[in-house]
Length: 260
Image (cartoon, rainbow, N blue to C red; front, top):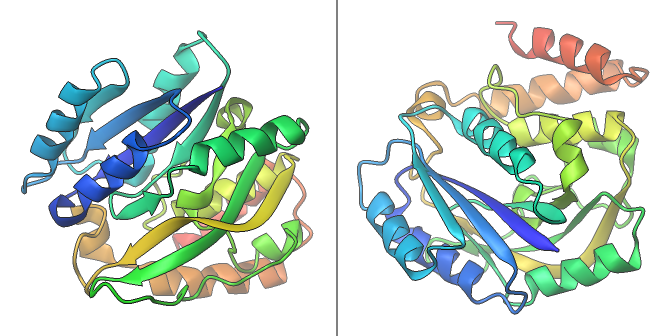
């Protein structure tokens, strides 16, 4: 089983080396990194190039120009789907996140143990930019995954998620949304009927950066609609829990999210 890692990056120089080190230190060595630099003006691309030189067979590096996270992820998605060489699962990580060295090994064992499960996520550790422990701001805790609850509040933090390749055919990252594209994607997957499993162990550390530092792209920086989108999202799902199909759900959600 190969772990295909999607890593979008925009001006993450202070954090990127630790993120890449957490990938190369995995005890499960069958992995491939899809790194997309989305127009960084710092040394992020240079750091990524150095990593690619260390692992030329494992790293594919691409550059863009402020395309946004959704476009980056959909671009890599299509490349992964073209590769039919072996069984794959997909992992996503931010350039300021870190995985424990047994992250891939543990998840592989869980996929082997539960062959009917399509997506696995786990709990997180939070670290402030000062180096002190933090809290999972706004991320609700659910001991057992509840699909209906997902549409009201998102308990899934993206760097803890690993899903089977088949999920790439069931959802996409919507570039019409200015934030929480990952939440939207998870809702699409649930609507498509995938099986999700939650584990309590913490293999991922996220770094909370200083306010205004390292936002994903200029597009996000300019609009910064996360809080408004989240409030609109909660209101929408409380009133529309009866949507059953992906297409209806997505159509109504996008219409609602794009309203002024």
